[in-house]
Image 1 (cartoon, rainbow, N blue to C red):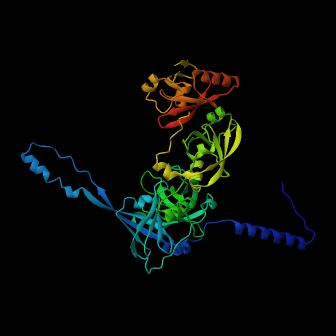
Image 2 (tube, rainbow, N blue to C red):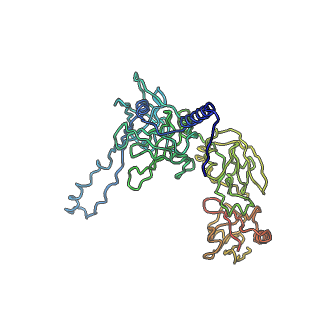
Image 3 (cartoon, rainbow, N blue to C red):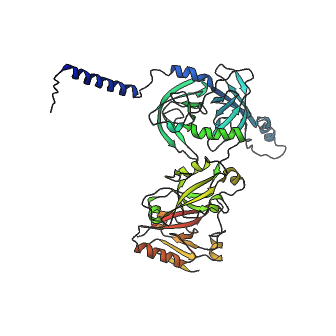
Length: 480
C-alpha cells in the first residue's frame, strides 16, 4: 500500500520539510557515536598514569638432599649444591597506577604491591619516586600509595560516578602492559555489577584490551573521569581475550577515602549470616517471589540481634535500598558508616516489619572472632521415609557420636537415603534441625506437625533450618 500526499501550496510543504529536517538533525546530534579519535583524551590523561615497579623477597625452600652416613664421600659431594645464601631471591614485577592528588597520592591494586620490599612509582616522563603504603584492602584489591613529589608538579585525575555508566558506553584504559608503559586501549562497557568471588565485588566488565601489567591502571570515561581500576582479566591463555574487569570507581573511592583517613578500611557490620532465597525456599516461607536475603543466624550480641532481627527473617530493604538478592546486602552494609543507625525492613511470618539497627565495625568483629558466632538460645527417633531421612532428638550419646557442640535443643539427622528429597536438598547425617517453617524444633513432634500442616496447605516444599559445621543454613525439602 502506498500513500500520496498532496499540498495545495508550496509554502506549507516547505515548512513541513524544514521541521522534518530539523527533527532528524537534532536526533542525529543527540545520538552517541564512536569518537573519531581518542588522541586528545589520551594526551590529556597520560601524565596522570604511572608505572609501578616492585621488588619482592621470595623465600625459596631448600632442596631435599639425600642423607648419607657421616664421613661418606657422597656427603661432601652433595653439600656443594646446598647453598643457604640462595634460599632467598629478589623478584621484580610491574604494574600500573594513577595519581589522585597533586600532593602525591597514587592508587593501584593491592596485588601489585603486596609483600613488596620496595615500591617505585615512575611518572610519564620517566621521573621515579620511592613510594610508601598508606593502606591496602585485600577484599577489594585496592591500595593507596604516597610519594613525595618535592618540586615536581603532578597532574591528578578525578573519580567519576560509575553508576552513570551504561552497557555500551565507550571507555579507555591506560597502563603498563608487559612493561610497555603508556599504552592506550579502548572499548566499551560490556557489563556492570559483576561479582567474581568476593562479598564486596562490584566490577565493570569491558572489552578494552587489559593485559598483565595493566593491573592498577585507570579506566576512563569519555569525559576523562576515572570510572574503574583495571584489576583482572578472564583468559585461558594469559592474554587479553576481550574480557577485562575493573573495580568500580564508586567502590574504589569509598575504600581509598577510608585508607587515606584511617590507614585501613572501616566497613559497616550488621552481624548476620545470610543465604540466597531459592524458589523452593521462597515457597517454604510463603513468599510469592524469591527476593531479599534470608537470615540463617544472627551473631550473639551483634547489631542485628540487638535490633530484634531473628533467624528466618528476610531482609528486603536496608537504609531505604531495596535488597533484590543476597549478594547486594554485604555491599550496601559495608558502604554504610560505622555507628550509623539505619532502618531495615524485614519479612517475618508474611508481614513487613521495620527495625532500626546501629551498625558495628566489620574489621573489629573479625579481630574479635565474632563472625559466625550464634546465640545459644537456639531420644525419640523417627524415619521420614517420603522425605528420605531418619532423625532423633538430641542426646549426650548422639551429640558425642556426631561431635555436636554449642546446641542443646533440636533433632539430629542420623541417616539420609540416596536420591531422596533430603539428599537433593543437601542434608547429611550429623546436621541438627533447629527450626521447621517458623517453629523452633524441640522434639520430633514439631516436625510431624509441620509436615502435616504443609500437606494440608498443599505446599510443594517445607523449609528447615539446620545447624552445620560452620553455622546454620536453610534448606527446602520437596514434599512428595
